[in-house]
Image (tube, rainbow, N blue to C red):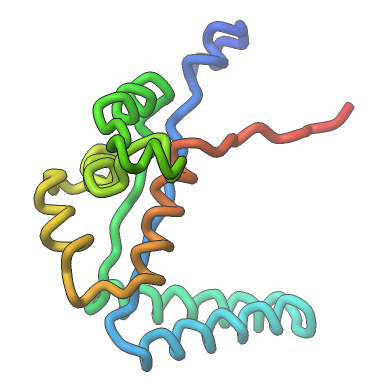
Length: 165
């Protein structure tokens, strides 16, 4: 016989898990278009079609995503928690010049690779993130901005929901 989960506040607090998301970068422009088309078909089906067509559009989108994961870049980003995040910020203080220009509360040159190393599941070091991604000619400015935003969001957003009365 299964035991019912405990409903004490302490038990509820302990069930909370870190925020997590997938980051996906398709390999080609054609892949981006395939993904957008599949997403648009699903959105249209949700507004104009029956459950069977919605299910077919969902299956089609899942198939496209699975195929594109094989050729693109896909990884899981998981929040590291407030204490580890604050420590990471302290470990990468802004330079004197950055402070004078009031540009950042951390040194972006060292902080972003370190945050990726701490947050992205898979075991790349901060140095590998710096050389393979942030200093790479293959990653465009928009892709890097999107990556930084997702890594920061996972570590600073809230999952609190209003359930009502």
